[in-house]
Length: 283
Image (tube, rainbow, N blue to C red; front, side, top):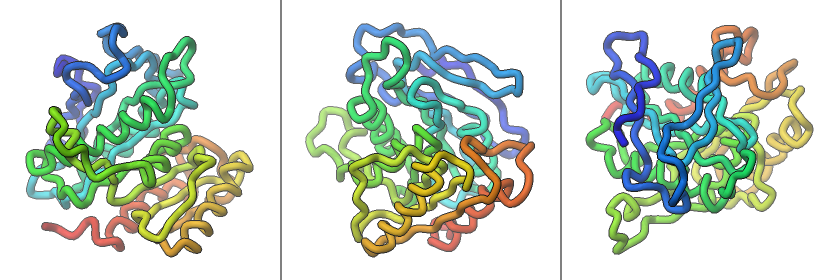
């Protein structure tokens, strides 16, 4: 299944071209009997690619050249209400930007629990896709120039729900699994929630990995107020987090060339946060 088309080429000639690989080369558990065709892609008038009908979850790789690699890696989970994935401004744009700065980036196409007639669920399929993505990157860390202790997950909206879930629903690997990838831990080393759907059962604890949180003040109340509330819970639990709430901004800002004002620099703030946490120190 390495036959997925290359989605794009990075503008900077020193960077590796994007390549898409399946999370499960022999088929994802729970997708037996589903169509083997690649996901459906529609393009909006603004040029955004929107993905649906995902039965073979995958990662698209954006790897910096070895002489620029910091060892940090970010798995990006686009949003779309678990009905579709807005992959351009909540995935590929960020991945290119990160790769240009020495951070390996991986855009995750996970299965959609709320698409019409879907047989998938968030915690039964989309979360395992996210966990598998972490295991896969960790299993090939040396090949991809990644430090296995610097792998994080960034999620947007519905993808933010997955990034939140994996911060506390993970494991240290499945010993004895016949699949060597599953023997690797699914626990990320950090997570970033960008205007996320916040899981109702999320209860922060002291040993949670560090979090980067961002949203707009004009977002829905459960996000514009819910994310600051989550920040306070994380801090009260004794874990680490950084929060940014952007004035005059609503839902779905993502990362676009058309962003104006302070919110246009949110990726810079994330990159600075990675550096302050020590994730960008050259190996």
